[in-house]
Image 1 (tube, rainbow, N blue to C red):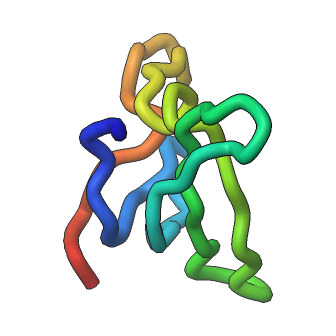
Image 2 (cartoon, rainbow, N blue to C red):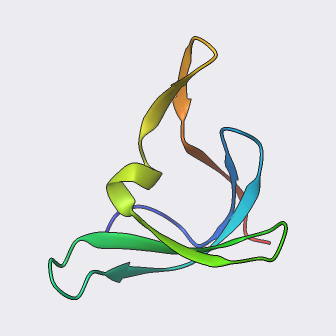
Length: 72
């Protein structure tokens, strides 16, 4: 699996998320990140791991989509 650790992350737009675990898609075996929003209703989501680690262009700067901010 990828080098994505469980813990808290900040999205480049400012919201925070908790990575719960890593998983594999049952049909394709693609690596997925299972995470919970730490705002609003606290929904649980999945995202392909390659997208989690992507860099995005935001306000003219290339930066990580998610930045690790700690275990809790």
